[in-house]
Amino acid sequence: MWAGRVGCRRGSAGQGDPTDTAERQEGPAPAMEGRQCYDLLVIGGGSGGLACAKEAAQLGKKVAVLDYVEPSPRGTRWGLGGTCVNVGCIPKKLMHQAALLGVMIRDAPHYGWGVAQAPHDWATMADAVQNHVKSLNWGHRVQLQDRKVKYFNVKASFVNTHTLCGVSKGGEETLLSAEHIVIATGGRPRYPTHIEGALEYGITSDDLFWLKESPGKTLVVGASYVALECAGLLTGLGLDTTLMIRSVPLRAFDQQMASLVIEHMAGHGTRVLQGCAPERVEKLPGRQLRVTWVDLASDRKDAGTFDTVLWAIGRVPETASLNLEKAGVRMNPVTGKILVDAQEATSIPHIYAIGDVAEGRPELTPTAIMAGRLLAQRLSGQTTDLMDYNNVPTTVFTPLEYGCVGLSEEAAVARHGEEHVEVYHAFYKPLEFTVPQRDASQCYIKMVCLREPPQLVLGLHFLGPNAGEVTQGFALGIKCGASYQQVMRTVGIHPTCAEEVAKLRISKRSGLDPTVTGC
Ligand code: FAD
Ligand code: NDP
Image 1 (cartoon, rainbow, N blue to C red):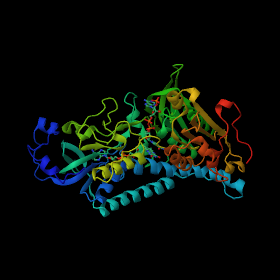
Image 2: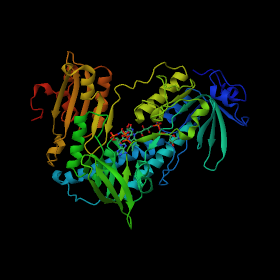
Image 3: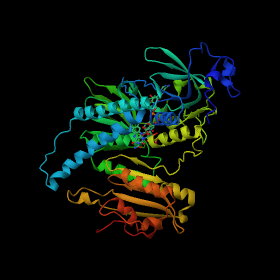
Image 4: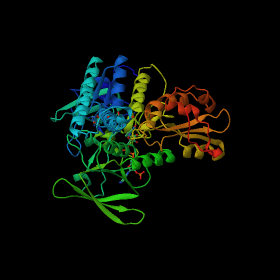
């Protein structure tokens, strides 16, 4: 909790507090006189940082946010709001929607609309998406101003445990001190270091959504959220897209669901190369790139030409420029993420880390936001509630969306033993797929439960249209400890895909055909 605005006194020469080990070891920082003083400094104006700063300011604290976007290696840059707003959830979901519209245009004549399939224009879509993102950048600035949060467009690094140095684009330095500091610097896409031409010729999700022109024929390397979503939306926009997976797709997810996601993508236009790893990217005369890869099982080499190579092989936490050693903040040497406890506190009790940069946290916007808000409320003495990272719902926005909450079938079996787990499942056909005769082979739901009555629901997995909307509602039930029997007594909303969850009668153990027939 706050004990008054003491940060400035602590930060001054020779007056380090007892926890101020780094300051004591390294001595006082130079020229501390011009410092500005706050109750709370937040490094990073993304999902977590902005939520924390706004909440603390609303609770009467003097708060500043320091945010700085290092351009991508390709020179792409953006404004305030962090990954989600600029190069993540928002542009991704809008481009996913653009791709879904293509499917609907194909369905439309079956429903009587006299529309012809028209080629998609990337530039128009990109312009609209980018304009929306810019409006969100502006909205965030206005919100900070309205809540009297001071915004510094500077790159922050620690001077000591209570003081930060912010450096502007022009090189101007500002010293800022506070009683509490929150690190919410997120992460950036990883480039492979061992592949010749990867950095020189490849792009990442930091660039894709800001391209003015179509990426053309694209190779997407990776097998998790970003790779699958990007490959899915590019395919949906009519681009020749190859997805290169080195091992298994969606490793952290239920593997039956992951296989169905890939099966659907492969059946709807994405070329999937599984068990392959890229080795080299070369520039050919003109725009094209030649990529050489190896099939890991046979060791056979192959090659192809692409207009764009998109690396989607994970993210690196943004800690390198923070000078964490000056504050004594400890990191996991393997992941590079900041070690935190249940209070989100780092190894230095008044320095916190939230969101993607914190060790062991889901890399999702809503968890970063909720963690930030709760932290501000705890610091203000409004609550003692901790962020609950269990049963966090999520959706992978692939062409057929996959939403889930709770345990995968594998995790449930590993935790409780196969004899104690009952899985109810169904292959269903969304009503709207019937008239245009859309393929529904992969529309599938499974609910993972304990076998003993009342059969607590451990996990729900939904593959189908609007999976995010469906999963969000059921997430509440699972958070409240819903049982299978309670879900079965929930009246469905007819005709929807979500009602199929409340109709899951066939258990895997029964061996009966789980295909839903009739109404
Ligand atoms: P960020 O939002 O990354 O914000 C960190 C900010 O700190 C950035 O602005 C950064 O420039 C700044 N910064 C870094 N270092 C410094 C420094 N030294 N000084 C000052 N500023 C600094 N999540 C979902 O929930 N749903 C989705 O659909 C979804 N889609 C995604 C799609 C893609 C392509 C990607 C990449 C991510 C997606 N995510 C999604 C994840 C989500 O975007 C992140 O989990 C979320 O943005 C993390 O928030 P954060 O506050 O931890 O960090
Ligand atoms: P992840 O860390 O989830 O996955 C990295 C993927 O890249 C894995 O499939 C991994 O394969 C593969 N990979 C790693 N190194 C290589 C390599 N050298 N060559 C080939 N493949 C490689 O990363 P993402 O960037 O996809 O996602 C980051 C996070 O962002 C997610 O965890 C998620 O929380 C968040 N996000 C959320 C979204 C949503 O909510 N819809 C959407 C997008 C992102 P392997 O398994 O073999 O190691």
